[in-house]
Image (cartoon, rainbow, N blue to C red):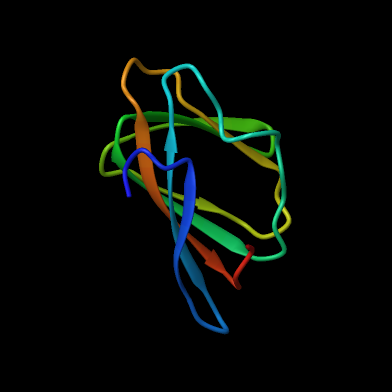
Length: 93
């Protein structure tokens, strides 16, 4: 599913998995919050993940945890597409 901006892959009553591709220099949309936790696993590329007031750099193999009800934003500062898997618990979309 590389190349698709966002796609939900699986869902149960307790969690949901999705993939996302963000083009170089782009972001995942406006800052947002979810009612549950979100986990991002970077497969390819580079991400800048703002969680609350802190910014974290994540490259391939990095795992980032976003606590419930925490404002966050993901952008791709790199030169190649950012591709990541994300888990929402409970489902967000």
